[in-house]
Length: 224
Image (cartoon, rainbow, N blue to C red; front, side):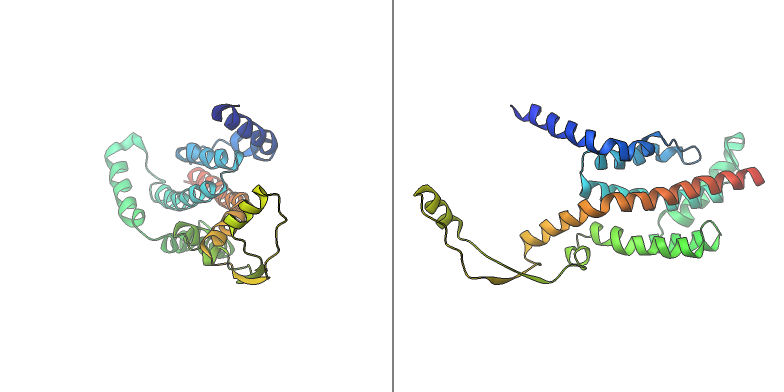
């Protein structure tokens, strides 16, 4: 089996396993936030084939883009392309107000504008601190902060292991040692494990807030 066939088999198996859990996210077509349909589907594609780290990074981009876009759409809610000149002015105002602001500030603004509840505000800040910041900055100590700092294990000399196997000699068990989970190889392995466990949950939280904004903006447009 060549590499192409191998990869096709691997991805096919993952799709078979994960598609049922993800189909509703593919089938959800955003209307008010139609600009984010493709980005939303890119995250789902990553989850589908278990690219968990990529899913988290892309979810973080979706997270920040959702908040900014909600504020921009709220600021321009009374305007559209029927009056291009006024609409363009309001868009530029919104960009100046929100596009270059930090995420925390935009979350607080969304709360003060009553686009989200106090509970939602705290949840979004929690997600920012638990996912967006640590993963964006590759802070493995924060991603792995729920895990022990050390564990008991064994270290082997790979050359010795190879020679013993080649000469049909039994492997010797080394002395048990205390090993730091901050060791680069181990920290990265745990980072990947945390990604696998949490990527889908993180996306679902952001997807829910995206749907909330979708419904909120739609309701406000009907009221105007």
